[in-house]
Image 1 (cartoon, rainbow, N blue to C red):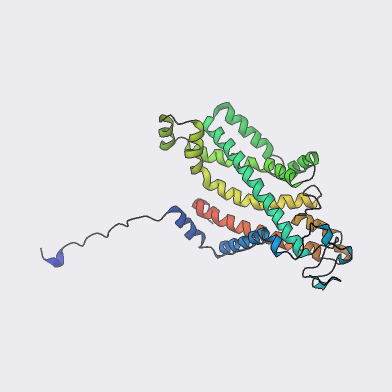
Image 2: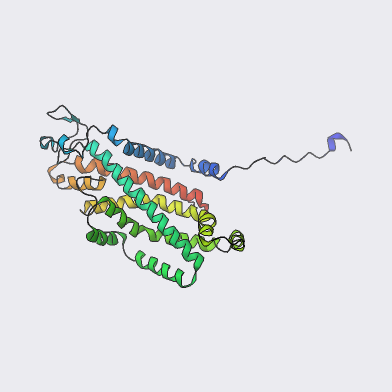
Length: 306
């Protein structure tokens, strides 16, 4: 056989496959809207963390406030020489400073509540799926019962009992949201509990806690991460609604929802900026989180891709 007719060698296989993290990053970057949402979210987080250094005024320090500076329009210069770029509210607080601090409270409440709800709900769902029987039936009936009521109604009842405060709002949001994670974790765990690696872990005599946390939970995380991302926006919206109704954070430490509520009574007199600018910032943050969550859903669960 001549050299020209020799069969060509098959192409060599790659030495290493692409890691899942790199694949997720590459697929996430395919959406320009998701990248825009991520950029806006990073800017919002940076602004909230750096609020004490970025804000021209500490809106929580009553010694810095002057009632003569109340309801100044955007760009107005006060008697002390301070320029209110976004105007001032009814207490004489600089709106830019109040929004930076309010964003800090809104984001901290949303992230903390979702993190606690994720931990509680995921553990309850995993235990229900693994144990089965009457325990699973009990947990899922509690979940079904809670999800049958509107979330805002449950939160309103809880805050009417607990009272105002950032910690009270977080407790109410955790109670409202844990059921979503419990149902999702239970559904994912049912698929995984009969897989070979779970049976092998059982045969090795691993404890139930180690089997749930080290083996079952990591394989159930993708849908939980997507739900957590979207639920942060939902928690921020619920907190803003509760604060607007007067049952959220205290007036002395206003969130974005409380700032919107503070300016609602002045809208009829043409003082629009007290509610407008916090409302725009709140909308921007929620849209950014939803853009990131939508793309994460498409990347982590391609079957749901639009």
